[in-house]
Length: 287
Length: 287
Image (cartoon, rainbow over all chains, first blue to last red; front, side, top):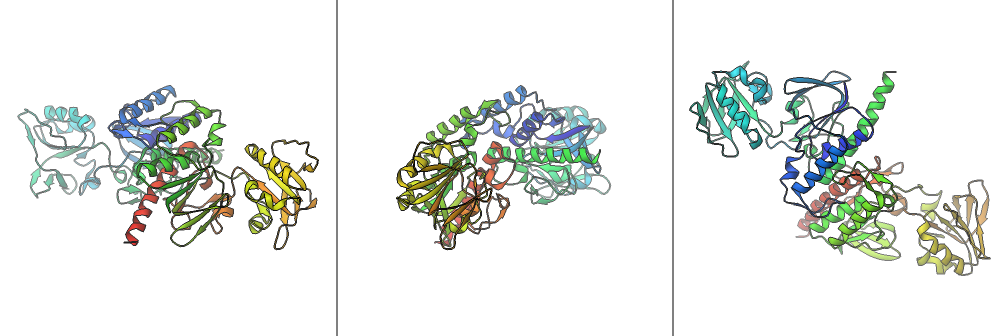
């Protein structure tokens, strides 16, 4: 049982992790060892106090060094689902279960809010993880929708497994695989009753599939945590960064604009302190 | 007319100033050229992302260098009063008037919430500025209540002017001046109808005076801006850092715990973006 599961290794997640680590809490921290992809791709950052004009890659390197010095190491697993068990949370990451007393979601802003029927069909022909579920589609027809170039290896893996693979990427992926077909238009909608059995492109074209893999840098928060109160693409939080679930917090871009490092860092810090309070509350309750 | 008056040179004020400066806004920034006294007095800071384990003086030096590089220079005047003129704000600093379209209060947390009757008698025998009002007490009896060692020179100035001076300091000030008398207990209450005519110490002792100078590192926000909605010593703000006055924002320690650099920096950033929105709103209204 962890004190806190932090999901996301951007500035908000890092800020919270640093503070909680200082307070000797048991943390499981999910995300990339690279930390912030978004910071790493920024050209120049001029308005982050304490760090004069710096390139994104340099600041992200500072972040990594600092995390390492503090003994913080992210677990590079993709969190796909969280469940409130009443008092604790179950976090599903690459099909492995983790239990934590509190959760901080700091996953940034999802580029898309999800396809039509995506949330309903998740786990029923819709998967976020090729490594976990690829074997289920051996010799079958699948689609893969990928907007994260770092996951290209997952597409290649699916090409090896599937009988037929429809591929849409946002980054111009090409392939020689005979069983692969590149889609020119993105997927708009998923169809099927108990299980996803076809996909629909933005021009209305329908394609029959046995399933689809959706590989994005971030999954929409309300898909990960069903019932989470949202305002459009943003998670609704109070001044302590708490969501509508007690013990479940959010910080950084996922809670709204401005999409800025300073804002994310501040919210991560506030969330960490709220989590410290919540943990001591839990401790008292259990006495 | 300034676009924005920022009051306070701690991490919140700096964060906002950096962002607003990047957006080419006309800023007047009130506070010490030393920037953050509180950061400067911190021993070690371990949880500020991007800056591994650093001493307070070093981080404060980074802050100063960064402000300078960005062409930001604080005006070392003490803001004692702000008035909402309906659309713009009048800011009174060391008896000089400044006009601004928006205001950001980032004054940190006032050690005291103010003495009894302090707000009511301000400007009527109660002054926050020896340089401004000292001459009014030439040959008269005054008291000085000082909790900021950097203002010792103001006490010396008052000793030269006043006929009799009662002195309370929190830092063990001593003097040989014949007209000076050191008080061993702090002032608790001010008395007087139209004008302050006596002070009361914490043991109930009353002393007749013609006026009192109250010299603190920060003035209680509700004293500076009468009508400001507070929750105890903290200014109430919404998720955009706006107070109950439209166009009037607050950020950093003055809005509540955690009293942390990351939190202050985040709130300053959020406030700056809300101010940018407000300024473009004003621009549209004036078209």
